[in-house]
Image (cartoon, rainbow, N blue to C red):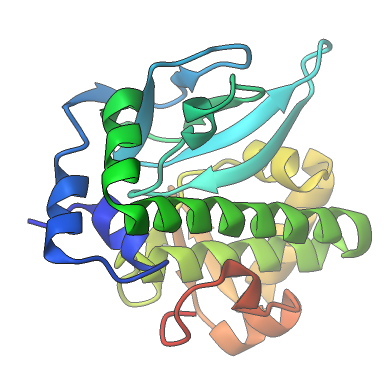
Length: 238
């Protein structure tokens, strides 16, 4: 069975059978993680990369007074801390939900990248795509309204989850709270709540019990001013 990591990397370039087998051998062990568990902390110098086999997570930094800024969300198939292969960690990664984490030794990953240049290119492209997401979020927080920001984030999650094969009948798991939304989009809890109610009231989406349901995709993309080009996914998946 092809892992989600292989599927994810192939979104950024075709891989041969040998290259796919090399990727499948990268994860040397797995472990379960509980919701809200810190997978890696700012200042760590890890010796493994962590792959989300199942479940979701988020990157964030927390200020001395406890205020938190979420910078991205991770879905199954993502490497949560590829940065640690070359640099120390300058942010935290925490699980959104219980799930399964795969451990990839840095030495093993570096060997695969040296042996198979197309694996190295695929990893490089994933990092460039993540940087593009950061830029899009920066534009959103600097120039978009709360209404547009929240709609845009939900569009992004649906497109990414669809590309990973994790959307069914316009539904996917996204176990965030309103506080997570506030921390990701730079909004107050009150403003977040009001905006979610507006989106629900217009019949664009339903968000309850950790599940996101899109009722009106065209309406939601219009509300979010959403253009999926920045995700750099194959055109048939965006």
